[in-house]
Length: 483
Image 1: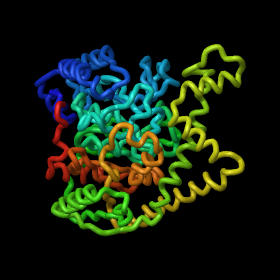
Image 2: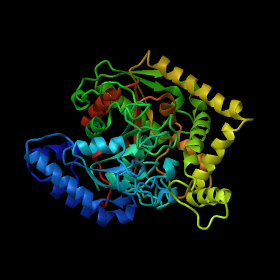
Image 3: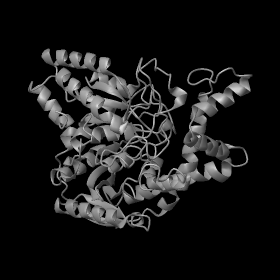
Image 4: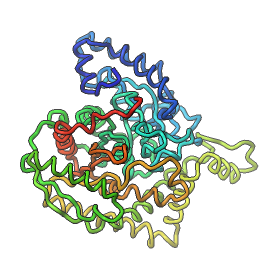
């Protein structure tokens, strides 16, 4: 049962081959048995899962149907879930039980999805390796000595190891697509505003976006269908109709114009990954796509711009964690200043402290114009590059990451080296565009992903291309040894 995709589970439940309760028990037992190797979960919610599974079975018995009705999933541990610890991977929120459900959690629960637990993540979603979590690093099921990518590494590792068919993640600079690439999954970052951020603990509010992680594009379409839609509680949510993503999967790629940016193939890209990217281009050409070289000239400025904007927003968002209202509080504070300093110093890990300090510096009186304002101008130039490119092509294709998964601890002493792993993904967040990573091969036994980018609200086009590619390749079907 653990090898079934979301789409296969939906068919199995509809055909009464098994019940949601039976499936849930199998997967909970599998998580208990195998997750100690991976550390992909922070909290297991067995009681809630069995209760939701029984309710889903009852709804099906009453004639209801739906692709997510009775389907087991997990949530990245920054989606608030009522009465359940929502830690954001941090000591700061280790004792926090959310008093309400995030919109994404509520929507998926209403669709009948069964929540198995909350997955491990980089602290406050800050990281590319899932090593900054207060609960310890997550291991990559393809090689337990390597990172699974971050910050949605717990969700990615759990799905890749077949502990469950799909999970939610969030993407601020590539945190869905990068772990998807490093663990052989399909991961989708929707257009900014497509999925509600209400109840999703913020890192950088103008960049964060929730999305699905699964083994196939078909499964991502099913999960995105349940997550997407306008939310009046989220001021950045966009009131745009949600198409039937599954219905659009089988469209022909004949005549589809695919742009390949020349800037992607620089010295920083592992040449073996470049070869796999070009092999995927050839595969799409066989399906009728037309390939064109394009240019994104301002891409070289993306990392410095991102690492000013994101920490600036983080320093503002994380100022609420002060030891007064909720979260970690130091013991026996001498006065208010001591309470603030020690609560935040004890509650936040080194990576979070580093980004808060960078952000506070960039926003300070003497440096706002020199850094933050300039970064926002670069952000606009990057968006303009994409708009110009999409006048010539329908989607953009390139590598998701410059390298395969690296060894645990290999980049801990050099944060900038880890930041450079986001070079291909952060531009989509800066511009607010949808992006998808799909499996495209292996280097030294470790998975490699190819990234697709599309114009605003064209998630359906990305899913269509990825689905057609997956019908003609088998990379996404490979399972890590031992799982």
